[in-house]
Length: 393
Image 1 (cartoon, rainbow, N blue to C red):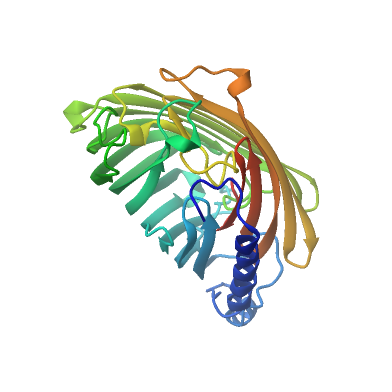
Image 2 (cartoon, rainbow, N blue to C red; image 1 turned 120 degrees about the horizontal axis):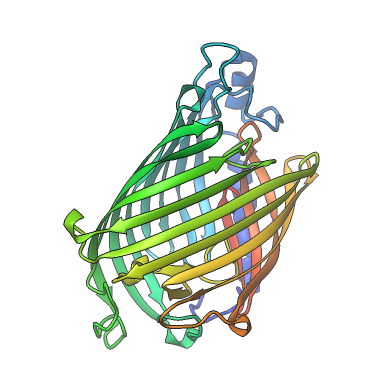
C-alpha cells in the first residue's frame, strides 16, 4: 500500500478477508489448554473450546496462536503469541475471589520490515493483596514522522527507523477492594536512528533525534472493577500515573509525563456491551519526540496511522457498542474524537480529529473471551482497515 493513500484499494480489502478465513481455518489446531476440569481439556485439544462466556471455570492454562494482522502502519504482519493464565485459589470462603492473572509473549515481523518482541504480565496475588504489572520489549522499527503539531500535512511524511529496548516494572498494593496504589520503574533506550537525507529529523532540529536513554520513577493508582481484564462485560478501570524522567536517574533528558485513563463497561443485555474510554496524556520539559503524546493507532481514534500527529499533550474519548451476531461472530460500532496540542499547536474545535467505524469479531477462545477483530475506522483523512488480536480496549 502506498504511504500516501488514504484508502486501501479493493485488492487489499479482499486480501484482508482471505487472511481472516485462513486464520480461522488454522485455529482448530492452535488452541490448547490445561484446565482443572478434565472434560474440557480434550475438547480444547481438538479446538472445540466450550462456548462459555466466563473464565470462572478456568484455573490455569496455556493459549498459543499464530499471529496474523494488518494495520496501516505495518501492512501484513505475522508471528506468534502465547498466554499463560492462572488464578490463585482462596485460602478460605471469606477471602475475596482472585481474578485471572496472565503472562503473555508476542513476537512478529511485518511487511514493512518491523520486528517487535514483547512480553507482558498482569498478576494478582492471593486475595488480590498485590498487583504486579510490567513488560519488556525490543523493537527494530522503520516508521514515519509527519512533524509536530495538529495541523501537519500527510505530504510532510518522512521515513526513519530506530531501535528500542524498554523495561517497565509496576508494583501495586491493595488499599481497598479493587483499588491499588504503588510505584513503577521505567527504563527505555532509544538508539540506532536512520533518517531520510534532508528531512527534519536529519537536520537535527527535533529533540531526541539522535536517541536517548530514559530512566523514570512513576507513581500509579488503579481502580479496577472489571469482571474480565481481557474483554470486560461490566465494571470500570481508572488509572492515574505520573512519571519523572530525571537526569540523576540516568536520563538523557529531564521531563515529566502525566497520564489519566478511564474505561467503563455496561452490559445492556446478554453480551450486548456499551464501552467508554477516555484518555489524557500531558508531557512537560525537555521531551524527546518519541516520548511526546501522539494521535492515531488501532485502539483509540482508529482511522489515523499510528503517531500521525505529535505534540506535548493529548486528550481523546470514544464509545463502542459490541453485540453478538451468530455462533462465535460478533459486531461493533464505534465513534471517537480527540487531538494533540501544546507548544506546536492549540486545542481548537475546528482542528478536532474524529473517528467513526465498525467491525467484526470472532471469539478465538470463549473461556477467556479472547477475540480477533476486523475493524474499519474513518477519520478526517480517509479510512483504514485493522485486523488484529484482542479488543481495542
